[in-house]
Image (cartoon, rainbow, N blue to C red; front, side, top):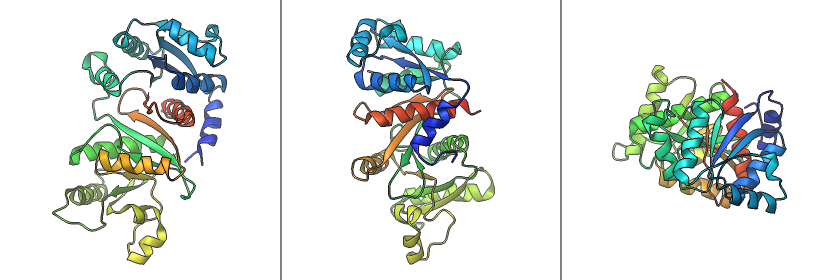
Length: 303
């Protein structure tokens, strides 16, 4: 990667000559405003705050910010917030959308609406990046928030979406681990069948720009010693750049364990749309939101 940690990512974004403007939909949320105002002051991005102007101004004041320093657009309700954000993107007046005080489903409805012209045409998925004290480099995980039980084609799209993002971060040939409970093909375990098929497509060159291994268990994907003990030989073993989880449930549990128990810092983006979508849980740490903004600015600015 072009950066070894999130702090380096933020520094790289500060040095970018053109600043991404982030359209914050339903911006009247304290944690969201705390993250975006910090990012603006640090020179990462520009922002337009969409929503209840009086409430936004009130929260800005609580944060010690002057409303005059921020572009604001008044919206009567959530639908209008999203309508304005979409228009800003389509008019090329914003290069990213950030979720504020609204439900993920409301945001997804706007993105998936064909009339809004936000989709590239393929699957929308979420890619999370992780900086963990017990792993030797940053890595990505997908999809832990959008696609509940993806079929084979869904997993392929999730993988290819994530590889595209990793290329933008400077990883030329991402090592992809298609995770399963076991590292052996078992026709009775659908996830191993899909994993083996994804590896085969990669070997045939139909999935390109990466090295795919699967089925592979989590321990073998991230711990070289475990792979050696089991005699599992692969360039991906113990050195994965990207973990593809079999479904949302297992993936969501895994990444929450990483952040809540493993001390990992994270940033996430919804990809597959024309611009990066900053979608972070309202319960997430302020740093997670801040670095997600930085990630959106960086990947959105790399063509």
